[in-house]
Length: 128
Image (cartoon, rainbow, N blue to C red; front, side):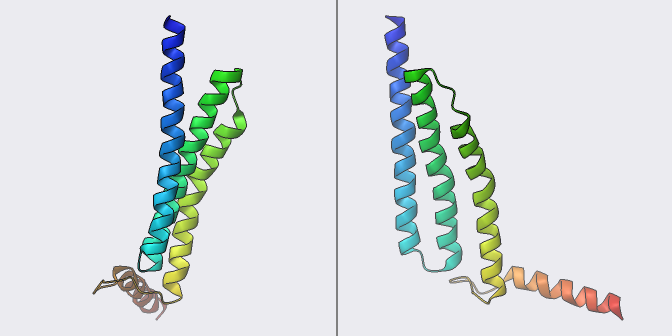
């Protein structure tokens, strides 16, 4: 009796993780299509892939452990890899977009460009 209750709870947990991850990936893909500029699109893509894929992999990990008794190191490494690389990649892409001149949508002030200009003035002042 107790064993079946635990199995039901774990089945529900697997369903929640996999469906939740799929929903997050779906909403992120809609966000990539609907958002106006590269920065908001990149935010949707990076957060959606990080949370969605991690949720699906965690659900798969619980399923494999529950059904086959397998502790899959590949799934754990996949979650860690996604959690570490997606935010870094999105940061680098957004920085490259800014350096190429992509302006944020609807902002009056570009604080990042002001910080870059201030740093350049400081370096020029120190060089003299």
